[in-house]
Length: 286
Ligand SMILES: Nc1nc2c(ncn2[C@@H]2O[C@H](COP(=O)(O)OP(=O)(O)OP(=O)(O)O)[C@@H](O)[C@H]2O)c(=O)[nH]1
Ligand SMILES: [Mg+2]
Image (cartoon, rainbow, N blue to C red; front, side):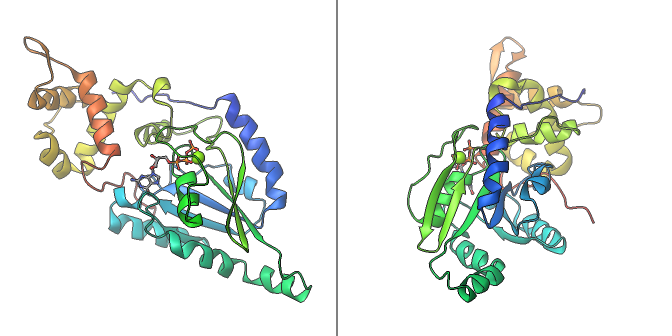
């Protein structure tokens, strides 16, 4: 099956990228929110340049939908590369309470220096950045303990920047989700589309579902068997698998013809809502 060539870098992202570059000067640290199911594909390759040497923190969000053992491995992987890493389920708020203390610990030297200069009331400012729809605004609301930023389950909800006070000494900058001009590896585009970081309208959902079902059969055959009652046989491609699953679900169009597009959409929706279980799609390099 051919790989999908998904690209999505609309004008509002170019604008947001520029705004973030400019705002970097006025923040003390950068907090990068990743999707714990795709901790590599959800990392913006431009983020190091954006961070401009500022202290960093990585949040593995949507940990409720990711395989806990894999989240642990990814956490260790990024820690071994010098990052402070937290895992979080921003929807329920699990993991959010340790964020503010973690920021203060990373920036302890700066706080100390400010104290030395008599700047006792000075606030720490942290930019929260990440791919579209990863949960940045939901995370900020959890950390702040109130609904200050607008959130919603589609990419592109946050359009401008917004400062949100967490407490008297910490402010967070909510930013629009951004991607980058080109996905060098087409698989990255597919993983971003599967996790709803890419607007559904720019994606061939049937082709994406077919490729995704093939991938799941290879890495999580038990989860597929349990949910869709199918098994991948030698020589079957993703469309064959979608058809078998559509048949099991009774998605009949006419005699002997099954609705594989409906099945593709069902699969993608069910994966996103966690109905297949907690499945992580990437393994950390060893
Ligand atoms: N299951 C689960 N859902 C989450 C989690 N965090 C956020 N969500 C959901 O993901 C959707 C997107 O959340 P937002 O906070 O709007 O995401 P965002 O990164 O601000 O998105 P943009 O502003 O569009 O870039 C919402 O429906 C949230 O409820 C999480 O940890 N687990
Ligand atoms: Mg947002």
